[in-house]
Length: 169
Image 1 (cartoon, rainbow, N blue to C red):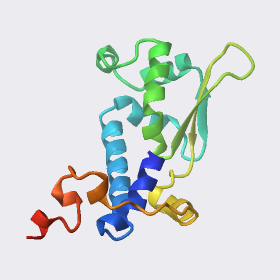
Image 2 (image 1 turned 30 degrees about the vertical axis):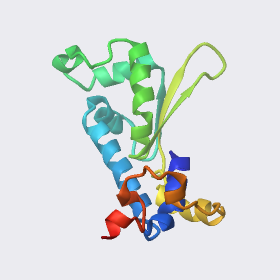
Image 3 (image 1 turned 45 degrees about the vertical axis):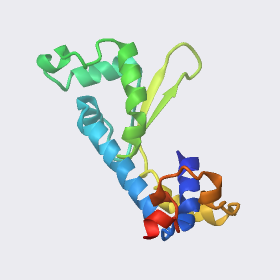
């Protein structure tokens, strides 16, 4: 997505948009998507309580599942979306990892010297927004000049073409 965002920012001037609004909106949408995913998943809420404020939790998927099971009631464990096996727990963690990163919890999957698979949950700093990364990436890159949209694709909707006769009327 970072490449997409870079190109969208590079195209802002061609559409007569001041630099910045796209990335601000994109960052807000990413943050909101993370919030929704975390609010909708009971496991994410419990994981935030397992990881100490400035530390880490480390163990196998079995140990993580046991730790989570110890924090919920039987009704929650019986729900369809609650992981029933260590494999299911690992799958849930892989799906939640990007969302947990937004609340400063990094998820690492390791196999330190052997067969045992370890999941490490660690408190880290907030992920940088694309807006804060923009200064480094956009200012160090020169984009080629954008072609005139009228000549490239005459079938574009008129709202995408500045100076289109029907839109200017």
